Length: 354
Image 1 (cartoon, rainbow, N blue to C red):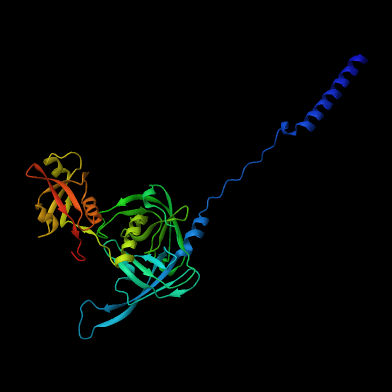
Image 2 (image 1 turned 90 degrees about the vertical axis):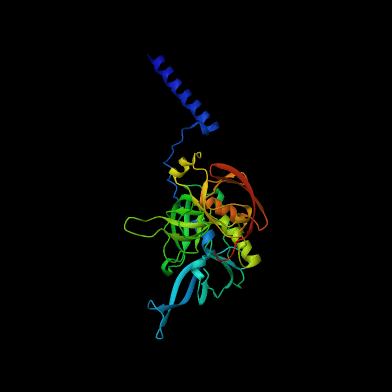
């Protein structure tokens, strides 16, 4: 009995000694007590820090007529409005909306560091609702430019601006849609739709992605009523780039023009014409002596393609036309009285007023 107890005690001592040696040599074999990991805090503060210094407050003054009809006793009052602009170039170039500066008697901008300046208007483009301003100041913060072509529905975006005079206000949402048109806001519509809150004073401000890159210029909201909210629109930055370059070079945007007045076809019209899917648009009219008329196109013709690209909408046709340089040749396939034919239209320069 005593020998059995002695053997048991000896075994325990040997086992403990062996365990001690193992722990001493390989401590990594010990089980590790893991405490619960904290949930990461989601924040867009870095994106705001990157982009918001380049968003400036815009203050404009206009003379507004009191009363509906002018008369010998017509009175005018000064209307002050709040808006926003974005510094896109260290040389002092700012982008805002055309409607922000249109007919303004005075324009002033205030930077995030408190500096105030009266900008020069370099050029405006009412057909995209964009304006290019310039300030003569040093050490300007500049927003990094992103790519609106890379924007996807569901991407997180931030709207930064000066709503109701509340400077550096930030709202957050997602991209609800891209390529929005048919809103009758401007001639060439290709908006980013977002549910980030855009209020009065946000016009001309920045729509940025989660990395703080500019993807659009906030422009408008859908008319508000009791059942409408969270539908705002921004001009995509890829369009802004092209307009800005032309305004820098020419003070205006030079666009191609074919003298077409197109309209979308209804489903019933497409079926009657035996056209596949939604292919084709209707020519409501052509401008007299314009490029299309000179090429032989007539009112009532159906345009099926331009330079080999199937035409599905009025907006698409206008954008293709405007993207051409004066003098460019555009191959058009059309249909008249059920017969297909091809013509070559030589694009002219789009008139400033149509």
